[in-house]
Length: 413
Image 1 (tube, helix red, strand yellow):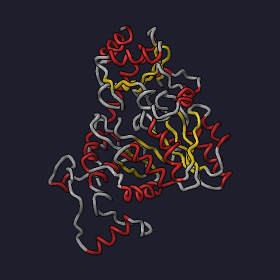
Image 2 (image 1 turned 90 degrees about the horizontal axis):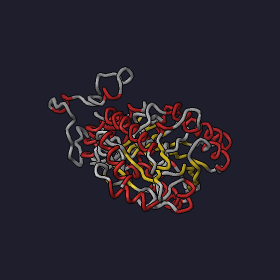
Image 3 (image 1 turned 30 degrees about the horizontal axis):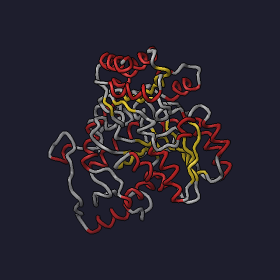
């Protein structure tokens, strides 16, 4: 461990050194990449101890030694220590993808006969897993509408077998805010009624870990597609879960047996990305604010979804003020003319990249209804506001003037 006290330094400072001693690796300033499948034990007794801890056969504290790269690697462990700092979480766990993080977490913490409530709209892959995949394990997925009334709806419809509430805030792709504190309060009321703990997990991909910290607002787990802002360069696939050590321990047992952990090379890439995370997200947010204001003034744009445009005193605006330290760089906007106009815009952009995903250094633009959210049934799409004319924009690091000019010519074409 480093000599730095994580309580006294900012996360962006700690990303440069925390959890790593250069003299472990011949004085290398950056942690090296460990490409090995297995690790030597100094003694047989060490091997026995490491396995007891890894397989959770030993109570209390034990030495988490290096065994085998499906279980742990130096790159994985250093990255997880650094990730946890952003939300002041006890532990973090890194996965091979965002869906690996979500699926492993749900399978580890839920049992057959349990129910999971989840906010909608939500990323299409998550929605499919909640509705179709969990049913194979006799776990019921129950959709509730995202937004200011989500906590009230949760209390109204939640069954006695509720085990977890899974919240994506802001929602993907409509960027509707849901109060984590409100969901926490409802979950606690339901837990008191049923006599069993109800966990709150938040997909924090859109705004975290810089602008939103769900754990500080009462969430048990903060979950990421680390492919997005954490990775930040559209060159890796990864996921992460942050939370209480006991919960992460349960999740990691499943991760070890399912083999869903992040690879050494991807962990090494993510450590690089963490060093610039805050400056990237802040610049992207500044760019997005300028782009959102332009879109709101364009006659071909019917509606703009962006937390920075939420009016204080409105349901969304109050949650933004309570929960966020910044408004992020995701924008969705609805064009007049439906799908044909939306496709015209997508086919006309020159600076924006027509591609799915989000959070990269480049600006990405896509059509949720036919792309990222096409797995959702039509009725739910209409209920959630995923229309033919809706376009999602992930604003990157380009000149905001160039982005505005590009969107203007595409909208005017």
